Length: 131
Image 1 (cartoon, rainbow, N blue to C red):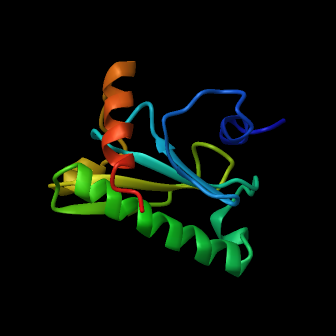
Image 2: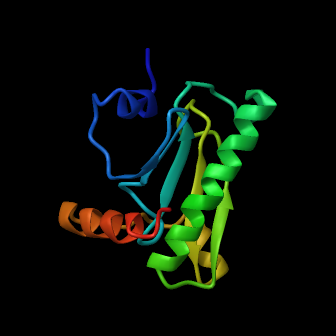
């Protein structure tokens, strides 16, 4: 059975896409820790990030860097936090989280409930900075 992320890649589930290549996809987390929280995935369904081939993993990091720079330009913050948890969805992914405090990247805190229009506006603001 395909993961929810594979279903997003295949267009079966809508998402708020930020950037996409033939190998990678970045989209907004619909239950974000903070406004602008992005998930970056390889399109290939691989459960564990360290099971990825080296070139694919390196490419994922370079793609994430490009997305993080756009995110920082669009959402004022001190840093873009990077987290790989790997337990919630069996598809390798990186969390990019705008941070002003350490608490902004605390995955045990309640998630935000943003409206579809807030998510659309956030995605559009970030996409303006994708080169």
